[in-house]
Image (cartoon, rainbow, N blue to C red; front, side, top):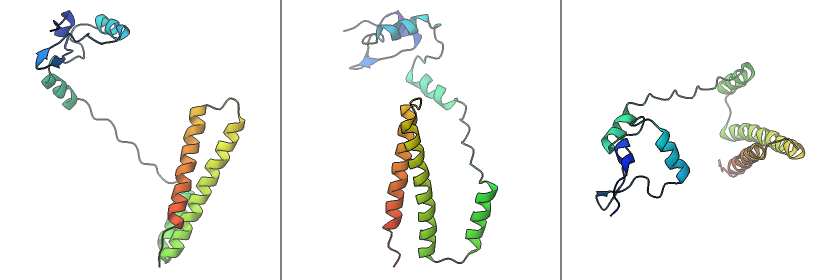
Length: 146
């Protein structure tokens, strides 16, 4: 059975078959070096209970702020609320907006593909969103309201 090393007191706990094992066993050498430089007991719980307590005392993350519609968007949304439209008309409005967003994303992807300085990850993100919008459009077009 492996004997726990000196780092066992620093809070990295591992058990195998109910018995403690060397917490540095199987750790990449660079990670072990990082742990050796850390002050003893800083940020590393000694027990599962201490880990749970650390998680419970963690400050709450602020919620994402909700986007406020622009003046134009608010005007359109207010108009939509006042109109007495049928479900088919609502579907057509939604389809028009989704098509417009889809076209915009397709155009941005096309422009970025021609730009040698554009990040591949950014192109991929816009392309994924364009694909999602295409699927939304297809789903909306296939909604049967009759």
